[in-house]
Length: 151
Image (cartoon, rainbow, N blue to C red):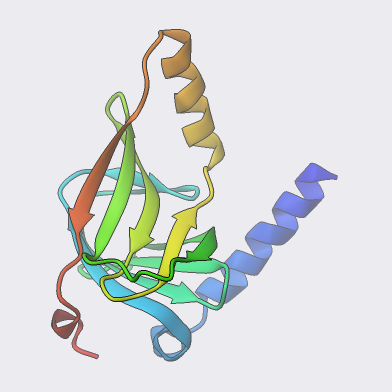
């Protein structure tokens, strides 16, 4: 049953990923950019360092696209609303050993806060560190000003 649900979820994400970026921008609640100086994992995709566009699609999907290549990925997210808008736009990663995983996105002035569901690879990294008595750390990167996006 789990494999059928996983296959259905992946097929849905693949179909959504095939939509044009223009459509994504029109339906985005969040549309931002960040320069990431390290490789990281996001959903089931491994990304190299670079500058990425982040766009929220609907209520539960986040698109991440490398500005310099065609590399992109999507992940199921959980949104929450804070009555006090974020003062700074940040993307938070969780670091386990030498691996980084996308964790959260907060946009300056927005009441929307986005958390990425923890992928299987990250859960495994957590277990490995816990077995050694270690914990992950957080790394926060500032979002670039929206005017750089060219939209």
